[in-house]
Length: 314
Image (cartoon, rainbow, N blue to C red; front, side, top):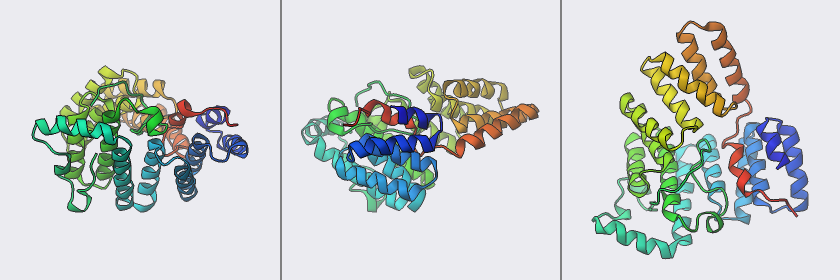
């Protein structure tokens, strides 16, 4: 826990030292390895971070949080093609882990004459298959997956995990500029978990990228109704209001975002842009400096994703 606290305060060297001490006691502690990978990613040592992540997955292959970390690192290093291979592996692992639940879920889906194998993804990825249960979801930045191992963390909500996986696949497609494929993934997630905040936000991102700003704002507002202090939703709403040139509204949401999470560099950047448009140049410059300082030590996932699964190494 000390290592996490140090990481969250961006004392990366000290955090890494504490993690290494913990790993000397238990070299296979996957939560410590996950944290080490995040610290390395914050230091922009992405290759090393990926190696640590892959080693941790050898110890706990059903850890979906680690798989998402790997997907994001691969996207950073190797692009969408490699990330999608890991997405496919994650979905196959989901099927294997929840084989009994899948039978019942597919039966429900096929009552509406839908089949999980009929997803409108590109041909080379059509064997990616994965399924709702509007349970509580924590706001952990871009993280969609369960933090711990699938069996220990998500055994009673497999459909929620499926929806989160679909959102992660959608994010990969969205970053690769493949809007129709991203939309297909989000549509599938919506069928499974229409009230899951990450599903709502993913659809909002697509609408925003398509220039449908008013509709995107409606999605972000829905997410905020479910999670009023979600930094991600507040930041996206602020961006959207900025694009609509509603600068005072944008400032309100972005100040809430920076208050909710003072380390969110995206919120500080967009707050700076909003203040600049209102000719508050000195305050805008301070925001931009803060954003740059925070981005320089920003991890690939929020450090908080490992907190709930950390236990003392022994």
